[in-house]
Amino acid sequence: MLNKRIVVLGAGVSGLTTATLLLQQEKAIKVHIVAKHFPGDLSGEYTSPWAGAHWRSHAAKDDIREQEFDRVTYNYFWKIANTPYSGVMIIDEFEYWEKLPQDFSDPWFKTLCHEYRHLRKEELPVGVEFGITYKSISINPSTYLNYLLNTFTSLGGTTQRTNLSHLNECIESDTDIVVNCSGIHARTLGGVEDSDVFPARGQTVIAQLPQSYMNWAFFKRDVDYETAAAIIHRCLATRPDLLPKDQPHLIIKMHGVGLRPCRKGGVRIESEWTTSEKFGKKILICHNYGHGGSGYESSYGTAQSALKIMKEILQS
Image 1 (spheres, helix red, strand yellow):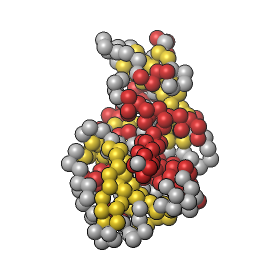
Image 2 (cartoon, helix red, strand yellow):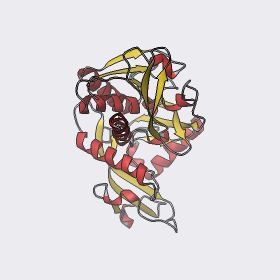
Image 3 (cartoon, helix red, strand yellow):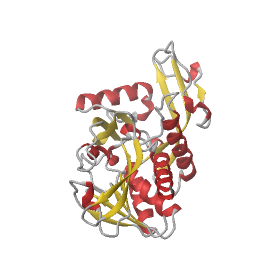
Image 4 (cartoon, one colour):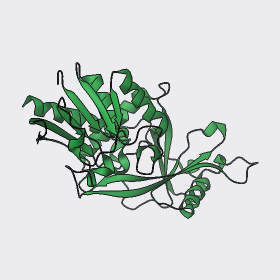
């Protein structure tokens, strides 16, 4: 991709990861991010800041493609965990079942995640019949997004804040490649208009916890204060130690709501050629969107896959 000028559309976790990876892996290229929202914005239509943002793969046992995205991303996050200002840290993940499902089988990532095991009976909270634990990854969304943006600009990347209605609007006379990481907006963006994209509402509750529990997250994909109360109630039912004894209620710092960019058929990672009538040249369009609620946990793997497909087409 020598001397190519690449425009990345979107500055969520997918766009920032892809743009940064391009500059890290390719030499003598220019990468420019075009987006309506950037890290620091808290708009409801900017999904990434509102994510629960921890690694827990939901790939089916027969979905080898999604498993590979998640596996690559898990190993990447494990490598950078605790890097200053990254917002990425290793945590003990716990999953509980009130009743052991009759059809339970260990998830595909049993052999990937460090220290995976079934919980012993004495480790289970009251009212819980079965559970598993393993080492996972938790990400502070705002910190990590800024980490990606700072890394990107330190490598020479440039940005532009603008609101596009059509994919062609980000193409200039020197543009060679456009990477479409438009997320939920891929449904309405001219030149894409993917009817398979649909939103799923997600809600997070960010609470002030005792100092020894600085990274506990509550998350669920519904939206209202009754749901928030239910999230907190269920979490405290299994982890009452998260509420200080001298405190009647959790101190809620924020309720976050975002639209997860889901897509029928899963994430779209593919490339296609188009012709810019304005500039009379062929432009390679690479799509990387439709991650649903798995944006962070698959972000590095999907970005890597997008780059691979991009290079294969350029070399063919």
